[in-house]
Image (cartoon, rainbow over all chains, first blue to last red):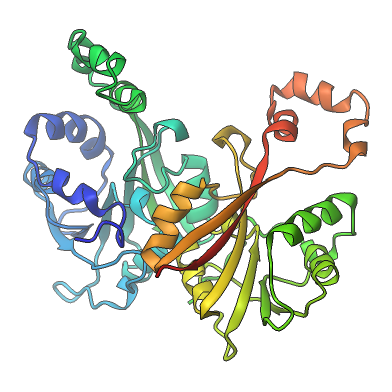
Length: 209
Length: 202
């Protein structure tokens, strides 16, 4: 994949590395308790199939289909025929997607077009201070910004939202080696700080008004 | 499709702003950077405004205004292709900047130039009318490279305030002490707008 043409998609490789320990901590503690999905609902996960969603499917027993789109910045998902058992998708999962997109309003508008009128869109993304932003993220939108600039213009109602602080305490207890790497110039200071303080996420449940 | 909505970032009508020293100085800074030839066809993105009128005067050129109701969703292609397109302080207001720049790219000739300006500050100082302020490296990587465009030159322009705004008594200081919002004061010293010359990548 040409990362120059599609900056931000470098993350795909990382997503395919299975790490049950991390998934279980993050999803069991923060994400799965937040979901409010009826039995039998047709769920679509935006993005490539990945072990993280496989873990969630296994844990929740949800019927989740993958919605793989070539270019989320421009493709008209709203015009795709997302049919399943005679209906349109009830739920969209947009997990760690929106921070990579240069046209987030376009993308959310397409999802709004594609979803059932009483359906829900779950949006999960990291929202850390600007100086900690991951290099493969275009925009980690602050939650109030997301509501004002994305949800309101599209007339999407924020049903619920939750701030997630996901601290991995082990990261602080790994000795002097990471610090030495920073001092000796092997690791950039920002990368080191990111490994310690990159902990803030936000999840929204959105519905059409 | 343009959804019906109220538009954050489109909160004031720049077309009715009265001419100030700030407008004149900013237009001078821009005129020093841009170099359209007299024969060049020039377009400015957005409504006719004080700054574009001043630029016409300083550069002694005709400027067509190219406007769309919603730059986030509308296609604003014209039959005429331009040698130079001005796009001043629009990008930071948009939630779909890649869509917008794709449209702007469609307005220029193969050897055409886009002059784009946008502010860049630390996040704490971002205006509430701005969705996203970006450094030139982020603009290049995330918005221009995917479209086959490249920044050739750039210039930093200071934020220009009227002197009178510094001389309005203790009200700003009182507001600062009561709200602990230091952004308006810090903005005076740390706000920069960058202007870029952008062309097709060869």
